[in-house]
Image (cartoon, rainbow, N blue to C red; front, side):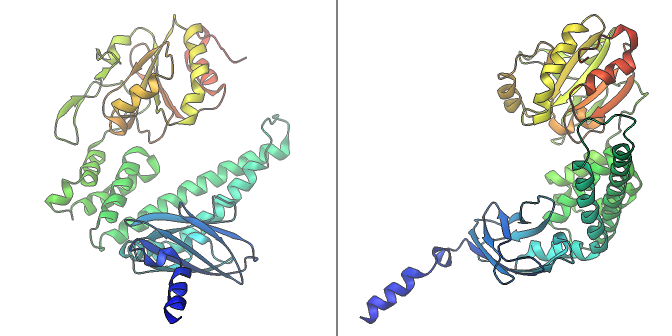
Length: 400
């Protein structure tokens, strides 16, 4: 009888307790109503009851996850999980979730907490600003006339909030880099340095932090400098951005594997080499795209119309940011009626030299090869309007 009872007891226990890969996240939060759903992506969720929730899962390695509250994607808390980890989260509605306390035996969580504590005041302002930005943006109708004072004022507020967001991001970067000068060099430390090195190279608001990047890079030993992140930091420190008004150069860079390549070497699906100078004589629109980018694919119909209507004055050159395998895969799904090329260097190729870190991104070159304008992102009719602005009367609008 005792054996049967013992068997029934163990059979009733959750399977996760027997797994070496199991972890559990305990939460105690105040100010949220019972029934609020807390989701730890991609592991699962639990419903709040008397201020408590618990989420269990399994992972074979340390994994950077996010805890989301309700349906808002803006309210989240970074959580590192690991096999065998027991994690405790405490917070309340008076503190933004990204600043909630997370205690665990996961070393990467403890490291993350150092950055969180150093930037807590900025993170709280940043989160509040994002929520306000989202609120104002969603309250503006899709079409606003110039005499609609109320909604035009909202657009001005959106611009101010975006500027504040950018400023706070730069302040967080500065404070974290200053902290990193004294922290041990770990894999996450190096990944963070690589991310900020890219920002310093490609965004004006971060340029002043270049000396901090150089100081941190000086701490690396030989194996760390030869790691992928170490090579990435050096790449971005050496990167010279092609700005508006400059001639588009044909330069040579070192690849991360030490090989040399020409920046302008682009090859098509048949393996034929092209150079940007091949297209001189017309305006050149460079379109940096990725097959996994929704806005990139959404822009294709408009780009196709632009090419058809403006072949006499404009050459369109699409350049993938994907690896060759993905590039070929996505190219098979679309019938490009213009140049569809690749420089073989992904995000560290020509797209990086123009200072872009997202797609779609566009560069307009004059017939002489001068950079007239750069822009990132896509919305219906935007590219059409932008091209007419710079090309002028010889350009034919396709979106009336």
